Image (cartoon, rainbow, N blue to C red; front, side):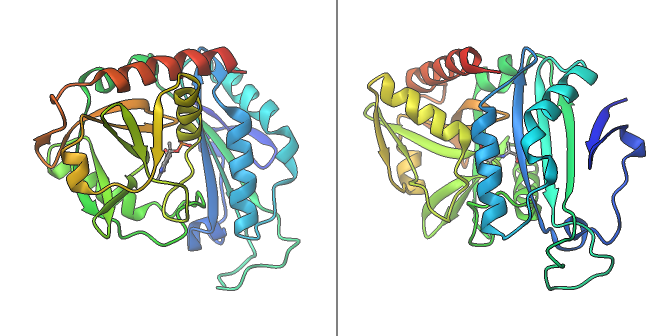
Length: 285
Ligand code: PDD
């Protein structure tokens, strides 16, 4: 049984309870982060906390009092759950104002802070990363402020179900003919050795893995172009891949049933995955 964190307490998972009036439950008025754990260490922890702060600020949401203790809480959850490889999920909601109301509650309403672990032994050696992911394209029907990491995940969830129904691994979302991102990852193509990925804006989540991968790519003197690309371009690319805290760098080998490049993981993505894992592990805390 897992030990989870709720508002200052470490509890067995079935004892952790949140009010039915919690804004996270009634309004999806909540933001979250997912930090990966490899060998018991946290990957890119500071960047995830910085993005959490940004998400809270963008929604005028009060930060939990425990904001300064997040590293200690993450480490305590790793220890209490004997977590070696996996994820730590963190969620902050605008709390429980005692009733349902569209208006934000009084500023002194305490936020709800929840963290829990998900164990994924051998996560860095996932078979999907070796085989490569197959995706379908679906329209991007999410709201416009996707750079805020809110828990409004119903459409991404629907898109995952569409992918499952199509017998593939994931869906890439398309807006005005251009790929925005995956259901829970950032999207890239490689053309003539150049890594192409959509520039940062409200259209996509500012992936922590994306930032790290682009930094490592620049350090390795690989060419990077941050611009939108179309579905057609993706279908004609030499390689494609996705990044996230849970998938790291994962090749995409097929889009809408058509192979990308050779239809097998290519040299650029394989190198990036290796560099990303190696460098991230070096910096893990
Ligand atoms: N998802 N884009 C979207 C829409 C995401 O939900 C995520 C992360 C990313 C990648 O961001 P990062 O590199 O910071 O993980 C991009 C997490 C893993 C999730 O919802 O489980």
